[in-house]
Image (cartoon, rainbow, N blue to C red; front, side):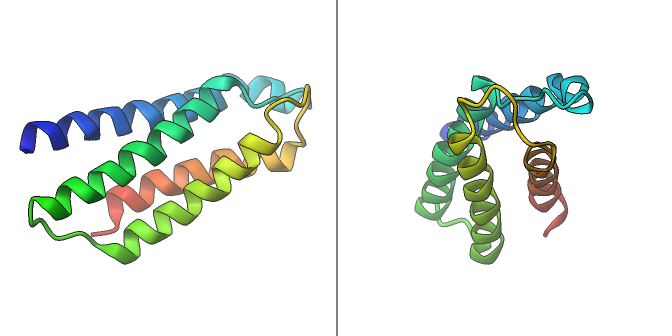
Length: 117
């Protein structure tokens, strides 16, 4: 079971890397007001959602403790990210504040995952 959990953790990290990497590649365009949500951002957020749900289930099946409040907060933040990216995914230019919100929420989700114990 530990190997399976570790595989899903790795996939979860790949998802966050895709989401954050997509944001970082558009930083220069954001400064010019021409940023857009790239497909990597949507795919990364969806990967995070699927692997996160799987991780919660696998950890509970393995009788490991899960902080449900922390998971709920992370899920709420991810749903907001997904909603913003999904709704605006086809726009040629995304409003700077919406784009910055996705980047800020992504970083916040990383800090919630790592610092909330």
